Image: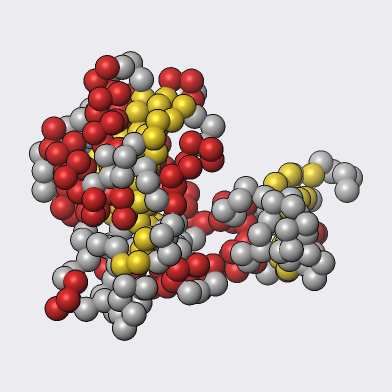
Length: 76
Length: 212
């Protein structure tokens, strides 16, 4: 079974620079239309199941706002 | 690397003037451009410590040029991280010594010209002509792959310092979306295509490898 990953964005830390979106090889990151407390539109994941866990988004994030976890079998 | 407790950093003047608030490591603030001089002193007094400076291009390549060249020539045993985004960021986007030809800034509104401001300085190439440095590499922060390569370069510089070698220097090409007038993804693209063309990436000096 293919490995599954969970990507968590820290909404309040994100300043909406869109670097993660531009480097995602699966193009499953989008910018939220709801603003955070600072008034930025933070990044969010649109298709969790398609994530391949390459960590490109987390590597390129200037604000360390992205965490990626590998899910155990059956874990949601 | 487990060095956090024995490391001392030296912060510059510029955008990174409050680097000591961003990095969870003991740091000392230096006068504009003088971080290499302060780091030389710290490392000589505390030879058992790991010492690094974090300097921008406005700090290192203009006002601090004398300090960095002489620290490198003396082979001082600390590491310098040179963040090159080709512009003065904190003061509002003025032309830096590393600003590219044709690049617009608030002090080169029609773009930098060779006749008026000369050619941008290539610090890695310049320092590589000296005998003092043991490791000089230029890396770019333009993509996840290059960021991982930059991480390796940073680690290597610290490993050389731990091994008792002399001056180590890592130049990191970086963006300044605000003062370049671009969005962050556009700035990454410009850095990949234009900036890296003038500042070629690569290892400029590596005495450890030459010795092998």
